[in-house]
Length: 249
Image (cartoon, rainbow, N blue to C red; front, side, top):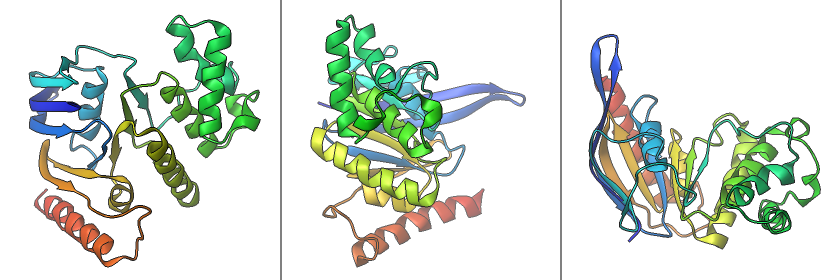
């Protein structure tokens, strides 16, 4: 059944009164789908992600995962933020084992789960290191492993590579795709990068002014070639939608 978002709206107080952030958002995503939410800053992407995570509630509408209404955070929805949010006083392995430990699993089992996902992100050699000893890309890989250690049905990612340099970002994009193709967990990935969305997504939701302007299925084989005519055509199509929005703004 996957994720269903139906007629969802959200507003926040501002100095000029109540500001609508999301308006009548409706879409569905299948269990193993990779969805990118694309748009300019301030279009409501992160607000939508936070509501799917259960950190905020819609003013109107309904959000469900496999038929169950979202009423708050849940281990079945793992979250990876732009800032890795690792605990600096824990080692890499201890950071990843936190979720299984909080679920009540014994220490040995929690560590075995942590090692499994540490291997998945190719960081076995960093198990005993602390976050301060890691590069930015390594920290984000630990953040992904920590979210996956809860074995969520949905992985929610809020511009997780936004603070990384271009080369590290490209490497992380490839590694994320490898992880996703191995696990086939549903991913909802927020980005403002058109090329990143086309590289990653099965489906791209283009947001503007708090609404979904386009819901595009991507039918390109993986791995995707940024020089392929279909890739370039889709980039141009998405660029036109976003440039049109910016010109009106």
